[in-house]
Amino acid sequence: MEPTTSWYLILGAALFIIGGVGLLIRRNPLVMLMCVELMLNGVNLSFVAFSRALGDIGGQTVVFFVLVVAAAEVVVGLGLVVAILRRQPGATADDLTALKG
Amino acid sequence: MIEVAVFVIAAAVCIVGALGVILAKNPVHSALMLVMTLFGIAVQFVAQEAHFLAAVQVIVYAGAIVVLFLFVIMLLGVDRAQSLELGSLPAQKWAAAVFGLGAVVVTVGLIAVVDNPVTGAPGVSGVIDGVTSDVRLLARSLFTDYVYAFELTSLLLVIAVIGAVVLARKPKSAGDQPTEADRP
Image (cartoon, rainbow over all chains, first blue to last red):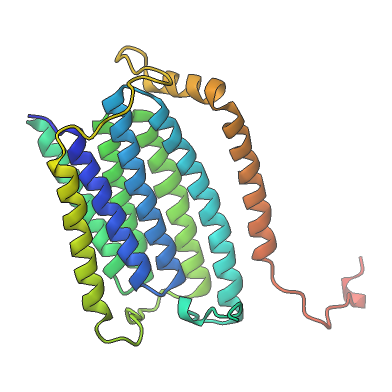
């Protein structure tokens, strides 16, 4: 018996949902960014699982791009967090209401 | 048999790490739990014979992104333990747990009842034939089929670096004129 595609998909889905719930309940901006990374990892796992099941390298190429874009997103996101928390130390996601109508 | 054992152990590491990220009070603990999850994912990549991606995952995600997180946490001094800041609604914790559990059960159930979750056409871009190494296949795919996306992502990285430098600059205060002492 060896792990089928469904096993990896289930693990990817579980990681995605755990990340999603974490993104909703945590208010610290840094931890929210980490939860986004969790979700991206769940998606990456699903992509690689499908790539292997279909015998197609395209899935792994997409994972490569997801990794690159995630890195760029973290860089910009952390720059934003630094800029915000410097001005207002101890700000949580609930305090960032400057654009509120 | 050994594959099942590897899968189960790596999956346990991933899930425990993920729960640790969302439940840890201290952001540094969250970052370390994230590293644990990323290593578990890298093991899963190796189990699926995506060796290059496993290496890149460890080097880029665990080795650069999480280090960046820790830099920012230490720079801003948010590593002192905070409450879980779950907001003003008292039932929010329970609602989150119920929703999360329900979502996991529904999704996992949906995936588990399907006999064959794979419905696409096999081998559309770069067939994995078990003989060519995955690095070679990935390189061929990246530099022929997806070369535009590749160039655009390199542009994206440059833009991200410039953006981060601009965002994280210390703001210039109004009385910031060069004094005599600054002149060479």
